[in-house]
Image (cartoon, rainbow, N blue to C red; front, side):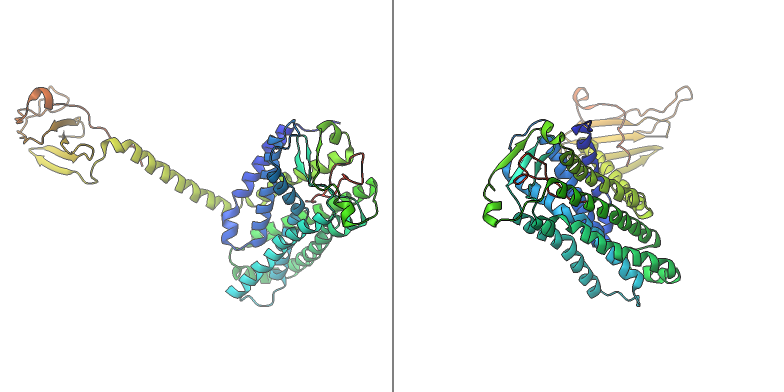
Length: 431
């Protein structure tokens, strides 16, 4: 069976991680807890799977046991994390659509944030605890994929793990349906409601509705698919905690040709990791080109350009560090600009400029001797004037130097093995 090269996933997962970072700041400013959690979980999943695809590319060496423990726990949390974030988004839209009053105080905002955190962070943490009950061994290492969690397939697996994405998706679908119905029946009141909600406009509201609906339409079918796939592998009865965890310290290492030759394992694992990339691209497609995003890009570009320009000026000007306002004298049409350097206290630079067409003459001297400027007469046959009869109290051989003055720079599924009772394919997150 053909499959995309592992390097292709590495590239796309890294891009997905970057796309989750870009819009994070302005969603955080608007107190959009659900969307911020969505970006955090999706970006974290993309980053870890990108690292895994690099470290375990064409090998199954148990390189970093502690990292593998962390990575597999994040995989378990992702079983419900993204559906839970979608639930947070749909709940918020539902409350905005059905609210009777438009007064939203600081206490209401704080309460809404706490509720979203309990859903978007609390449920994934509970999922980690619940999955440990049905975990058959510490983790598996799969070639190209990296560390993966393992669970037994028992009736308890469906109660504690596999069915939760579908349950959360159905609750989210309820909020999404009522929000959509209410939105189209109360459009006249929405301008007033949105004006009272910081960081929310009609366009952003519609985009949030779109991502909430798409997540629901992805979560329920994929969650159902994983339930069916686990049932087809065979369900064994739950015996006891000791029986399930009898070989818990085992780390199973599986070559690529083994897990890729099993359709359930390959489909489940590839759907899991590519769905994270799809979530990242989906979010950026909806929010990465909005008006507020383009405004933020402009501000970032302006700030970055000004910083780079300042750094370049400081870098190139360090060898010619001067005071901000030079001392200027004028005598008989000749402008004298005296600029004191900070590098060598005994050295100074004197430039003489007559007209815009006359090049500047720079004189560098030591020991600060006195100097005298005599009047000059422009010649009709010369393209530029000259300064004559300088009487300097210094030795000419070592002190007089002329040149052009420099200018500054411009500003939920585990692999299927022969021993189904110990290393079956448990569910991974649906989109």
